[in-house]
Image 1: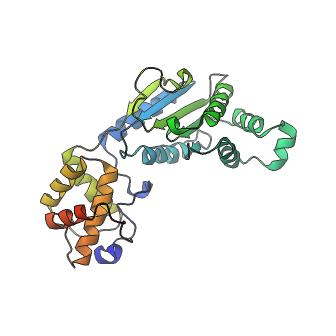
Image 2 (image 1 turned 135 degrees about the vertical axis):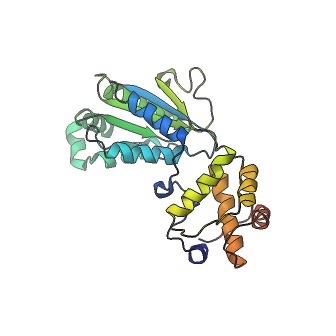
Image 3 (image 1 turned 90 degrees about the vertical axis):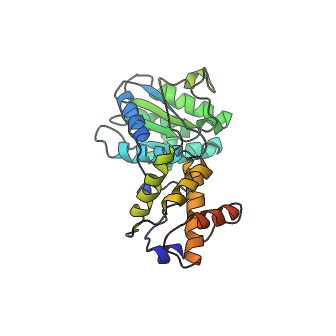
Length: 270
């Protein structure tokens, strides 16, 4: 309904991370440059801290795509579901490393095969972990062992991780082993950044008109969400749904207010 009414090719305000509509802000550029500089050292543990909904997962996906294009980096390893079991962790890593079942017989165990594969890759090895603080103890111990073995030479391995609870920048988070050599963070959008964020995503989604959101509607969207990108996505999507249902081609304050009243209802069908 929204797509047809506003002429959109893709979803501009989905809840799942979508690198196609990533809106780079100055804080993203600064974090990215700091992380890239850190990975130029022999070994680094890099922490990305951000409040809930600020875009940690999306930013890690951007880093993954960027490092995947680097000629000096092996294909990055991504642990997306940190709350999963240790078996899931091992199977995910082995799949990304292309470890065949026959390799297990010669290496003795899946963990040993993964370590062997990491140590024999050329270029920088980068492991990205989303929400490290949600990782079960057994999985955390396995990751620690992999990092210790892979970084033993002090040359090639880098761990980049995000966290959900907001205390990575404090002393001794989780386990002293994971204390970062570099800590960087993302924050919610400034009020003036909401307009740019919404407009940019609509353009990336294929919108070719002007003023899809009236200035007063943007101001209300910013104040209601506090600049939280996840909440902006939810409310903006509902407001587009309300406007389309009313036959309107721009979102007004009234549409935002009606969307707020629908805030806890089931999300509209894209």
